[in-house]
Image 1 (cartoon, rainbow, N blue to C red):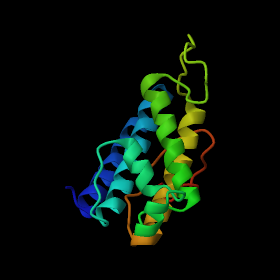
Image 2: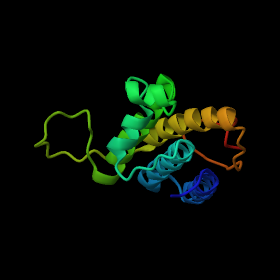
Image 3: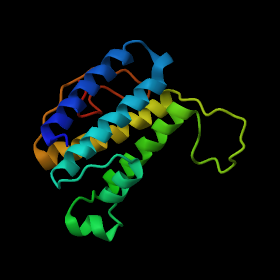
Image 4: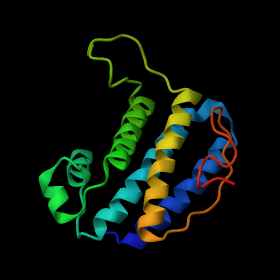
Length: 162
């Protein structure tokens, strides 16, 4: 099982990768959204590693951090509502990027691809910011300062950006 520090190292590597693909422009918003989600995955897995928990399925991770799940609340692995929501929103945006589906679309036979645009990247960055700030405070973590350009995000809005 990967340890807390190993997950945090992967978060930092992913943040540097996010910065490098961001420099390529808005043609790669889908990949940037996906990287944001995988930063979140490693933040959550670092947190869960402190409870000797490791999961291979996203649904199991969500159950373990769900503030409405009595088991997760009792054992302390639950996140607060705001951070849990940020994680689930990031997961949904990442699924959109990877599979071109909109999870809000109840029409399973939809013929329309749900592409990823800069607005989705902006939302992803804000959700990642929520999680990074939470874990920064909870575990006294430092993250690399990276440079990100995105419409809707001003310099200094994100705790991990220069």
